[in-house]
Length: 295
Image (cartoon, rainbow, N blue to C red):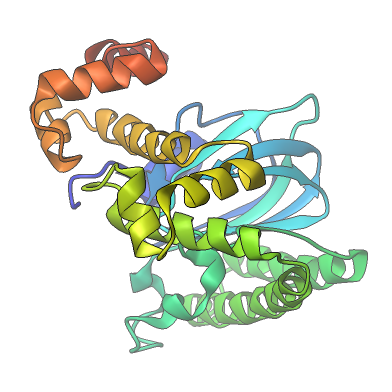
């Protein structure tokens, strides 16, 4: 999926009106979000955000979070995200970095894989205590100080504090996840496993029966359990992730409609177009034109 459109560090900085300097990281001190992103998108970065004020609705792949302060938001390059504003502007401090940023300090190319909050179907939003917020603000403030001054070992210091921030956040997420696991039901676990399978197979498989068989369940029982647990049918979820991926692909002008249909394993562009219009009321080409007008 190398053709999937993603915002790189330079493009992220442009969105926030920051000067283009380094290419493999972007530190954004306290900032009020003014809906810089209106459509679902991916980035090429791992992002860690400390929410200090306001609220927002955040959609990450198939999850929806009602974000309030104080809290953490962490997302990796593979997740699709979309921000929906509320009446309270979101106030955040954020650190975005690529794999290359921590090299050669860390030679492990799979370093980020150890943090589940960066992965698809992970928990990307975490409410925090006031004391945890204060501890994280100290690290963010030190990173801001390093960014704004001419330290002899500026990059090395930034990398060290980035790693410290990652492990501090990991500890908070771990405690939060352990509490959540104790409350999870069998049906919640089924939904989680279903979504894991969706992310793995939705490009090729859109049959409810396929996912039921993967989970060793009768399709009727599987569908009813998903509906009872989430309010949506399994078919709804399959459709939602397919349309979400299609919207991201359509934002890439280098991809033709035919190529997108092929990537999503539709038999042809016409079938893809009918599917997209049925579930969005817009044709793929009309959606693409409307995105160009907004940007």
